[in-house]
Image (cartoon, rainbow, N blue to C red; front, side, top):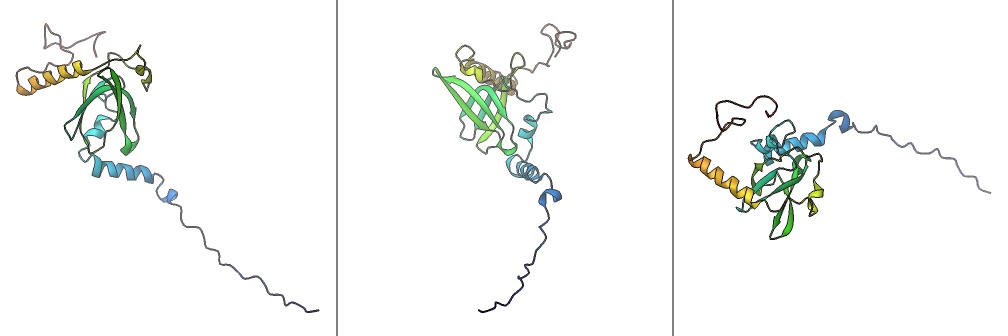
Length: 185
């Protein structure tokens, strides 16, 4: 019978784990997204300010928005949803074209989007964050083309200087006096 010689096990070198990037920079993705928006997607910051939660004039669901693309094609519709996701921030617009309901997601930082304008504010604040119920015939707003045409006509008149811009809250009888009291905005 042969005797085997006992050999001790080899020592394996153990290395410490690499330093955690979470400890170095806890919000790395947010910093990268912010830098990408400010340097590449929106260098002027106009769209970021337009859709900021702190902006009182920011578009809300229920408003009618007009989006113009670099090809010159406009698309207008009722805003059903605003999805705030950093560089992927998008709005869902719905309009009725030729008796067919059309919805379109518009990424606000897309280079194909030239401008986004608020045509008409909702009469009152929507009590839902997403107005998907407006897809049903009972609640459907219908075509907003008439409202948009009126807005564009008025905008052309204001830009040409033919019509002055009234101060918000001014009354028709006395434009120098603003609203006060219960009906003030």
